[in-house]
Amino acid sequence: MSRSTAEIVREYGPFSGADSVHGVTYDGQNVWFAAGDKLNAFDPASGKMLRSIDVAAHAGTAFDGQHLFQLAEDRIQKIDPKTGRVLATIPAPGGGGDSGLAWAEGTLWVGQYRDRKIHQVDPQTGAILRTIESNRFVTGVTWIDGELWHGTWEGDESDLRRVDPRTGEVLEKLAMPPGVGVSGLESDGGDQFFCGGGRSGKVRTVRRPKRGSATGSGSQIPVDSTPSD
Image (cartoon, rainbow, N blue to C red; front, top):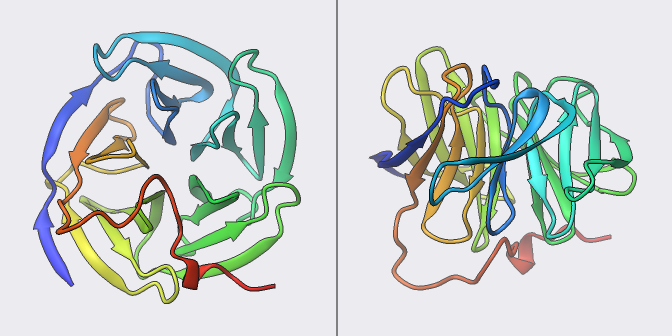
């Protein structure tokens, strides 16, 4: 396992009217973050807040290319980002103890905070397709180039971890500075992660370690890790 210190590239916020940042996602242009009773979008180039959606937004956030998905207590909401309307809901696997949320290859990936788990979930029914165990509290979750990453936050210690999607084995750690936590996690599709900063009210970008060669694109899951019927 490789260990290194996280390189924080930029900080955004705190934002007016947002006391804390929970889930974070990226729609290819704008960063969205959950702030309790709103989903907020800002421009990552300028840091300017662009719009807000009035919707319960207590934990992880994800984007499937068309819709936003948002954890709210014991459910996951599917939201039209254009209108802000909740189109559907499914039960969250942790029943309210859920944290991070990510979209990859047609399914949702949900962190369970204190239970230290990541679930792969059917976005239509909420059925759990697979569960990965962690040995730390799980906050944000994201996929990039076939790599599964999640955030951790316990006490004053927080890091980003790349884990084996089959076994949960920790392959790589990026340690955040003492007292700087990660409450939500999303890749920008390239060489940076967007990280929610909890009660700091900030979103931070962290540089993703370079690879020797490209392993794919987007959020593709390795073929041999896709669950069979």
